[in-house]
Amino acid sequence: MSENLHWSSRTQDESLLTSEQIRHALGHFASGVTIVTSLSPEGEPVGTTASAVSSLSLDPPLLLVCLARTSATLAVLRAHRAFAVSVLAADQRDLSAHFARSANAASWSAISSRAGASGLPLLDGAVATLECELERCIGAGDHEIVVGRLRDLEVAASDLEPLLHFRGAYASLSA
Image 1 (tube, rainbow, N blue to C red):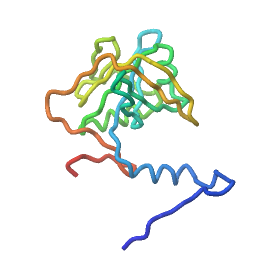
Image 2 (image 1 turned 45 degrees about the vertical axis):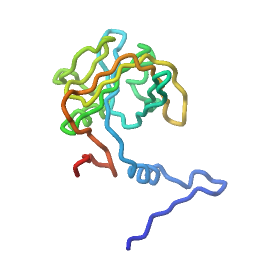
Image 3 (image 1 turned 90 degrees about the horizontal axis):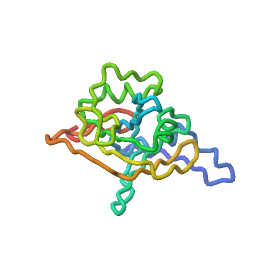
């Protein structure tokens, strides 16, 4: 029987837990992989990979996304006051890696996308897409919690499997 790993910060010094330890533990929580997109003031699409995405409320319909304060996509969506979330399918690992680069490095020239109902860029082949108006941003540590009010959504007609992230790697439901 293998032994569990254990770390604690139950002392006066909260810095005892390292970012590597936290990342390792939270990596055991399987999450879907999404691309959060918006439009620059010039109308250019921007996007970033995000797995910290969750339903927040059904009434009113709210979604939350957590983005690093340094994210170029966060700055653009704050200015545009709207964003979209494309839930990636299991065969879209390349898109996840592509948009994990900084927004300035992620080129859209080879990306298959379309404009959603609100004009936001939506990725073709996604399991689902959700378009939101920015409700508010809440600072939390080195990230911002972005709350969006759902305005439009689309679910793929086929039975696509979602792209998952687990223990620092991609995973699937059938694995």
